[in-house]
Length: 337
Length: 257
View: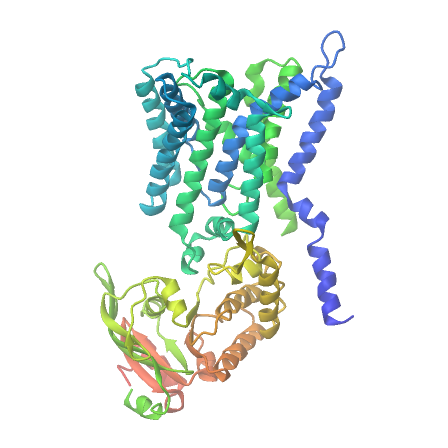
């Protein structure tokens, strides 16, 4: 055997599609999601034996519910890849939603309302990113503080009122969040676009490579000339921006907003990203993982409801699944090393 | 020092350090270092732990700025504020901890911080194909069995070393700084790395080599500089000194030479 054919043989062994799939967490989560769908389609019938899980309406429901979480899970994945965390996304979502609601109900147009929501989110991301990247504070502490600040500001700004009148462009605004495109809910379309966007950025741009580099060895990234601070900053900006987008979609869909919007969403978002394979130690994560992770979390919730399990149990099942997913990841990486 | 500069008069001075000092708070890591590096010369930098070797390397690579003193590059005063500055002036570094990212492939590690890009319509995207093949070429040149697609976390110590050294070969550097390149690898790989240093020298590339291993220094270096507690205590041509003398200088048994 010649040298180059030997190299090729080794290459094909270590880089085969199956090897890659076996190592990839999103692949196993996809299998789990498909398995769960099969079980639910068999078990998900009501007392008269009619299918309740495999209906267009329920699927729409799942799709809507998971897209609001999934949109933020995309942003969270970018942050987690850098070995960071953003605990403030739920509160940022609440504050952005209030900003949008307040602007619209004060009689401004839909552009102004959306701009208010997104700019509020970006401002939060800017503060998070600046304190973490340039001042060097710990992401956990900074975003925990931001969680508290944004929730409190949402109360202050809204004066604990609900906003449900969205001014002159109300119909347009509601159709953005609640409408659909060729039968696919707009928020799901947005989530798919964001998934493709992040997937492209992670795999084909220097920015994406730098996120992974910072997460696996920040010191090395600095020494090789990666603009570490700017890249980290951009990850927190992107994460907050996705929280703002999700807020605008969910407010339009619900037709109202209170300062409790997005309460403890951060836990479901982080759970989705982690189940989708993002490693809190940094350096690992994918856009598809965020999508499939949030889908699975919603599927578990929906499945339990359909199976008639008391909703109080939801947290227990989701929690067990997070631990199970991470344990599985450990076992596989232990085997391959 | 004098004997050295006379001998090297025919060669041009690439880097000239004048009275370089660096302190961290109350600690003086370097005290008034004067040193010249000639083009294409292999210089060994020795000293005990805490003597200031790594600090000096980090100043030359733009990671630290000296507290005082000047640096002249090919006769012009020069200041490196960032690692990229040193790189653009032809100085490449192999760090002691190799500065590798475990979750990236060998090829992406080689190109880290200076990724090759191409246009996709209006977008600048990574040219992964080019990076893989170029990294493969460099590994072949280094005679290393490293595969460009492998993740660095799956690699042996020697392969990791090869990735870090391959990184310096992307540009055509004037000077390569190496911080303990032979500290954590097997005997066979040590001779490979020393072979590489010789190959760099034959191509006219200068090397500043930090090492604890006396035999390595005496195998590849033209000159040896000894630091002790932040001060330069010796700067001698390798043929004018001995391993015993250098050991004495490092430990302080000999005051200076």
